[in-house]
Length: 325
Image 1 (cartoon, rainbow, N blue to C red):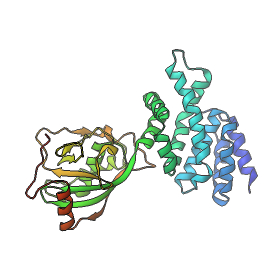
Image 2 (cartoon, helix red, strand yellow; image 1 turned 90 degrees about the horizontal axis):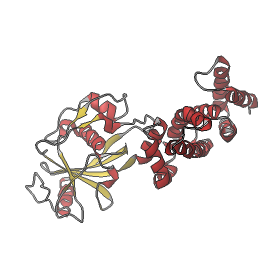
Image 3 (spheres, rainbow, N blue to C red; image 1 turned 30 degrees about the horizontal axis):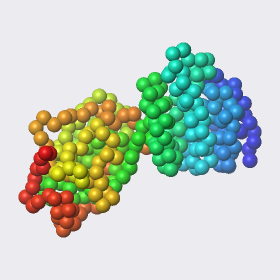
Image 4 (cartoon, helix red, strand yellow; image 1 turned 60 degrees about the vertical axis):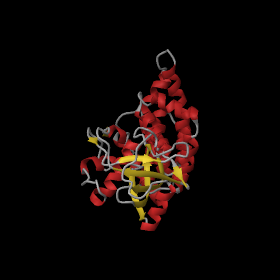
């Protein structure tokens, strides 16, 4: 194993004070990348050094480890160490903003380099579904991220990772009485999901249109989000055991709140109501290019399957619109 590559990089990390890297650091980084490609175990050794480095050096090394993950490296070698470092820094920064005093020198140093560490955390978490679920269930952690997201993008990015959901979805288009099994990936809210459902179906369903590629590319994290609006082509409803009829799906609500029937989330599409709310591209942000959002078609239901589902949901033949009580 090329110990020299790791030794030189660690020395460069200890000397790094933030900002742009110098020629010496760049040379050490390139040598490390080459060594990691030839001998991947060196990545695990580098990850073990994160906690021993000063914050600027730890953050830039973590960021390099995230780059290796994005290029196909194994998350098992560095994921736990990067996430542990993030969890160690986050409460220190949070205490600085939750208190009445100015940030300490240490807290300011952590904050200044937090963005680099957060980029790495996103890259690693994108390949760590079990850790994402555990973290999302940690109410204290999610509260800290929510309270810090307006102060540092590093908190907003990781919060978005932990709130993103991927799941199976059944869509029933009431006017045509057609049904589809879909799967959505890495989506947080209903409006984002609506845009990508519309992009998937386009003009193939009554009431559909040619998708606005400008909007769709932003929704899929193909391009950086700019100002823009989307509008509903259909009315988005679901059914719940506690409600006597179909109920509206809130575009602002988390996608996980969409009701499930037989283990699969269900959406009913019908003609839109007049004056239905538009939504803007802020519902697609913060964008996670390591975890792009999408909706894909798994299969179309047969006519019989669609009718069975509609009967199960209490939608009678000839129903084209559903009214919320």
